Amino acid sequence: MEDLVIRDADVVDGTGADSYRADVVVDGGRIVSIVKEAAAAGCQRPKAVRELDAEGLVLSPGFIDMHAHSDLALLRDPDHSAKAAQGVTLEVLGQDGLSYAPVDDRTLDGVRRSIAGWNGSGDDIDFDWRSVGEYLDRLDRGIAVNAAYLVPQGTVRALVVGWDDREATPTELDRMRRLVAEGLAQGAVGMSSGLTYTPGMYARNAELTELCRVVAAYGGYYCPHQRSYGAGALEAYAEMVELSRQAGCPLHLAHATLNFGVNEGRAPELLALLDDALASGADVTLDTYPYTAGCTTLAALLPSWASEGGPQEILRRLTDDGTAERIRHDLETVGSDGCHGVPVDWDTIEICGVGAPGLGEYVGRTVRESAALRGEAPWTTARRLLVEDRLAPAILQHVGHEENVRAIMRHRVHTGGSDGILQGTKPHPRAYGTFPRYLGRYVRELGVLSLEECVARLTGRPAARLRLPDRGLVREGHRADLVLFDPRTVAAGSAYDAPRTPPTGIPYVLIDGRFVIEDGRRTDVLAGRAVRRSPVAG
Image (cartoon, rainbow, N blue to C red; front, side):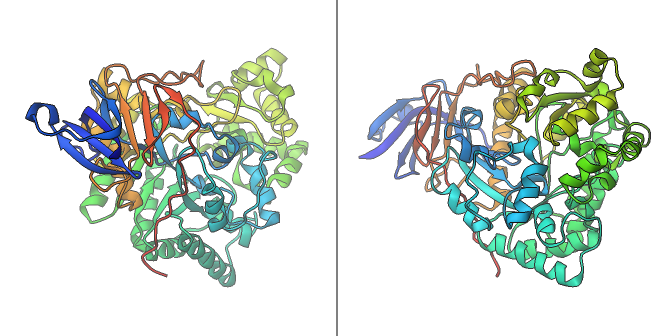
């Protein structure tokens, strides 16, 4: 007998097609048969060791988080209910150009400090890898959910060029090409960039184009955090579309938002740009999270010249009064490139996490609120916090627009990504609520998307972008990465004031045919592994 039969489920299969009622049989980690309308047809119903009554529940493929920051969380936290309870069965790591492979000892130290606000210091992690393949092997020891990896261009540049703002030499560019090729050959699905983060932001387009040509040759895609989501956002989107065209590389636009006051109501302009690119034959997709606030590190707002040289140089500049005044002027008057060309509004910058426990009083307040309590200027507060916490503070940026969020999520190349940062006392609720929020808020309550179309954006379409032939659909022969949810009650429990509240209405989640969520509770199953895509060239 087979392992499991899920009876009388309303199957939403990940293609966007209408739902249908069926019994779905799972064996050996795969879907072995789908018997439609079994009860009504009066046919011989499939038997299994275990039968699960799914009356009233939707059965869909597991959700794919196209933009995740769980690079260390998956190793640190075997439970990882933040994602498993949402129905996420696959996360794409290595985002925004900065992660932990490929590295050497020197580069690893700089990267760890640079993105401590995303992933923590890593002091509790045994960094027993250096290459992309070794990191994926580490994941294969057993993790809560599956994970794919993007080669992080900023980390590659730090390894080869360092943290300086200069062009790569021909020899350095050749080495970067080799490192990207090695990462893809070892199983990475593409390459990411963080073009408002150091040192990735120091790469000129010619350098990025050369690296993207390597990505294209290996069947991967390019996933840039582009040079602006603020004053120059539309120009930055156009820049990435043109760069990918020059390189002949598929493009996936990370957290495709239009933020700050300068972009209110401008989503139709972005969508027109995408439509023109698609009409000309471009291979473009994007992901978004269903919230208006962004999340990053406080240090990311600094101008690029202040970040040159890496974390130690940033701290040195912040402790020099004259240099710190130049930084303040760029932030508050000019609009630094780290803040997307928009003068910072300290009322919109909320501290959501710190590294040092003694600084917890800042968390949950805007920089201006904390400054007012101390009777000082906001920059004075921000500067002191950066120095005392060694660049670790994470922030929420309340700079988005709901009409832009809804318009972009309606576009036909849209997929879902949480951009979820799990660190901090008060993290962004998207880390714990993105996928049930799509289903509860934007499908059931607002009707922005149909259920079938929304599920396709969270499952089948991401799997197609990742070129995973046996995931993302409820189809015979596919991996049994599945979610059962109640469309009447599914909702995100997380909110800005209670960000770690679990979702409701998702009683069952399976990975490789094994229950990781059962009756709404996390099991002790670690069914996740690294998902490697075989390259098409070498």
